[in-house]
Image 1 (cartoon, rainbow, N blue to C red):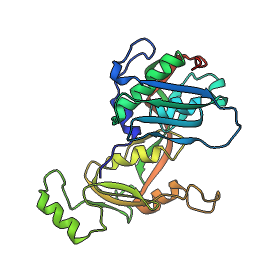
Image 2 (image 1 turned 60 degrees about the vertical axis):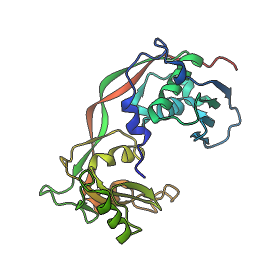
Image 3 (image 1 turned 60 degrees about the horizontal axis):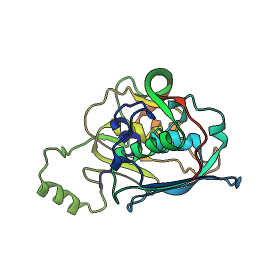
Amino acid sequence: MRTMPALILCALVASVAWGQTDPPSDLRFEVASIKPNNSDADGIGGAAFSIRGRYSRTNVPLDVFVARDAFGFGQMSRVIGLPEWTRSSRFDIVAKTPRETTTGPQELMMLQALLAERFKMVAHRETREIPVYALQLVRADGRLGPNLHLSQINCASADSDTLAALRAASPTRVVCAWTIYAGKFIASSERVQLLVPQLSARVDRPIVNQTGLSALFDWELEWPDPNAEPGAAPSIFTTLREQLGLKLEPTRAAVGVVVIDHIERPTPD
């Protein structure tokens, strides 16, 4: 099934000055509990949004909650102006939505509204030049890696019978979709731009696509094991280069960021 990660969905949310514009009632939580977590435990618990309209986070640092959950950014560097206490203060946050199912943009707006209401957050969007990685071709002649190929399927024009036949012929093959499964990122008839949000979640900078590739591609990329000891497995930089013939080059670029103008410790439940 084709899915859309939060890193893409965040771009769909309208630009507003949070804390100054009230969202509609159906984009606000019905009830929310925010309590300090002073357990000194490691790790963040909870499953974010569930299919039953419940948001839950345990022991989440406030800066992580703001950047990753409320704005969908893979890197903390895309939120500017958070005070130091937001990095050390952790919270247990549970909230109930007005509906059992919500879309990604709606979820982000609800969390932003919660920040405005309970943390008195005021923020705005800007474009700033910051450190990024440029996704580029490794070879100057345009030759790609062994696991990146031009797609032989145009999903936009293929009829349902053709797609059904392809799936039946290779039941384990991904057809006109993408998935991350068993340590691999597999895609069929997708654009290279799809790599950007997934890679961004695994590195320390935003990524801009400078490959110049606009066609539809099939690929299979092995993700490094996040639980492996440092140096025990190839990095994402190595696997990307060896398998897809792409590289991440450090540079600077103009990127959309969120600037925090004001934020306070939360009001009690």
